[in-house]
Image (cartoon, rainbow, N blue to C red; front, side, top):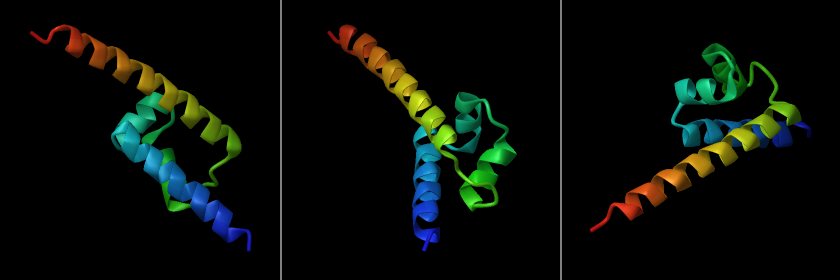
Length: 78
């Protein structure tokens, strides 16, 4: 019965990879080799709590950057 939570975590990680913009972008944001990202998504490597903490931190950084970019766009509207 431990498979379901691990699968959920792997699915959530895969979703986060897509939010980053794919494997290459996630690799750059997380500082992890693209092959390792793919191995996490496929279940070949386990997704750890520490990895998910790093994903959360990188997502917060992405939100901050996106918010700043949106504010700059809004400021240039006529």
